[in-house]
Every structure is written in structure tokens, then in C-alpha cells.
Image 1 (cartoon, one colour):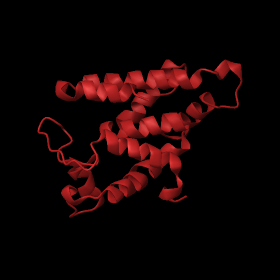
Image 2 (cartoon, one colour):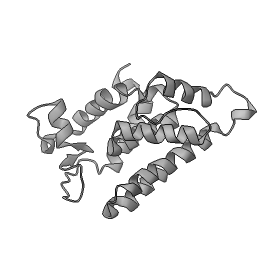
Image 3 (tube, helix red, strand yellow):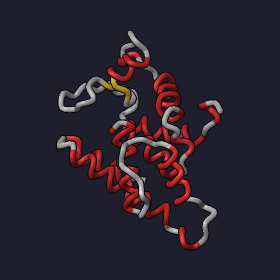
Image 4 (cartoon, one colour):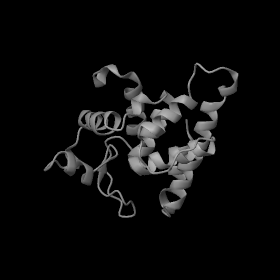
Length: 178
């Protein structure tokens, strides 16, 4: 599938771009991410495109980076839409491993026996997909709501633990939204 055909990704990346301030270049010394545009740090951009300066990054380039180096690489599109898009958005700010640890902790809060190792491997994905199987009847009717509530709580806790009070309120609001 091409990026332009994946409507779940397009919706998710639009939210990320909005949350990350769009084309606004930021370089707040209090933010551990450093120089950033479209939510993409100079450090990440250098790893992907050596010599490219984040200041000149275009929105289309940012979307392509998110498509290849986030959405496809970490397989967010294989997850149920609400969980996948929320986790994708969180991984942009927290990093993939912390995002997957928060998901695994949310899964444990919902009774699943999974280690919080920060890896979205076949065991984690399989348990999650089975838990959120929409074909199940009444006994699993609230599973998505329970999973999303636990995931949002874990994300908010992660942000609070960063001890960056200047950004905390915005990050926690971002965690609980949607």
C-alpha cells in the first residue's frame, strides 16, 4: 500500500503534525529533543538523511519519514485503529520503546500476561489483537475502552515522570485526548 492510500495513517500523521506545531521550528533548551520541525528532531533527521538540516524539512518529507521510519517500521497500521494511531502519536514524542512499554503495562492492567520489555513483537501484538478482537461477543465489549483508558493513564504517567514541568500539562493533555 502507498502512503497516499492509507487513510488511517494520513489521519494519524495529520494529528501528529498538529500536535507537534506543524512547520514551526523549535529549539527550546528545556526540551530534550533539541532542534525540531514537524516533530522530527535534527538528531533523527541526521540519522535518516545525513547532511539534511531540519530547518529545510518540508511537510511532505516529514510525512514520508513518518510513513517509512515509524508507521511501517513499527507496524502501527497492524493494530486496531484507535490503539495504533494513539501509540504512533505517543511514540513520536516518547520514542518507540517507551511507547511499547506503556502499551505492555496497559495490557497487564487489562489482565494480559506480557513483559514490559519495550518490544512490539509477535507475542505482544498477538495478545493485543486477541484481546481487541471485534468478533468477540459481549464478554469483550468494553475491551477497547478499557485498553485505551489504561494506555492513556500509562502515557500520562510517563510524561509526569520526565520532570519537565514546563511541558507536562500539554503532554498530559495530549495523552488523555482522543
